[in-house]
Amino acid sequence: MSEGTGAVVVLIGAPGAGKTRTGKRLARLLGVPIIDTDGRIVAEHGPIAGIFEQHGEPHFRALEREVVAAALLEPAIVTLGGGAVLDEGTQALLADHRVVQLTVSPEAVAARIAGGKRPLVKDGIGAWTALVQKRQPIYDRLSHLTIDTSHRPLDGVAQEIADWLST
Picture 1 (cartoon, rainbow, N blue to C red):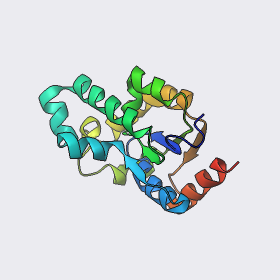
Picture 2 (cartoon, helix red, strand yellow; picture 1 turned 30 degrees about the vertical axis):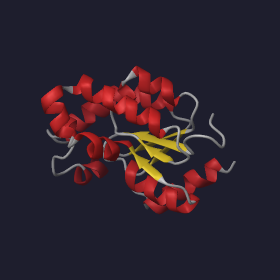
Picture 3 (cartoon, rainbow, N blue to C red; picture 1 turned 180 degrees about the vertical axis):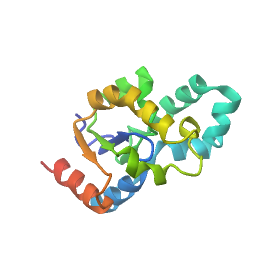
């Protein structure tokens, strides 16, 4: 696993699990930057939903893999979009990094995903549940630590990750 070069830790997990919000708190705790790969994609290529609509998911995953590869070279907290792990190239990139999976229950995520900004879960909690069930084995295989964010303050989640990183 990466020590001293590249990403400090990578946060993966279901849409709405709190990866970006936890990552921001963790970055403040550790005094390092945060890289939200979805944010970088939007800054470079426009809204994710638009990329899906105009070019399809395979094109989006290729863009995402490039952004993840670059982010992993930086000494930062790196948060991935929920589906980034579907790409085998992205999975391979994570092999040498410390990876934390954040999970969340369907009940807790329902309010978090309302509003339709996430193209693969715009059809509600049923679509979210099916999506997460499909991805769960990949999340489990790639992660070294799993933390449920359903009913915990994200400051506490960030502190738990910081404590784990220091061991």
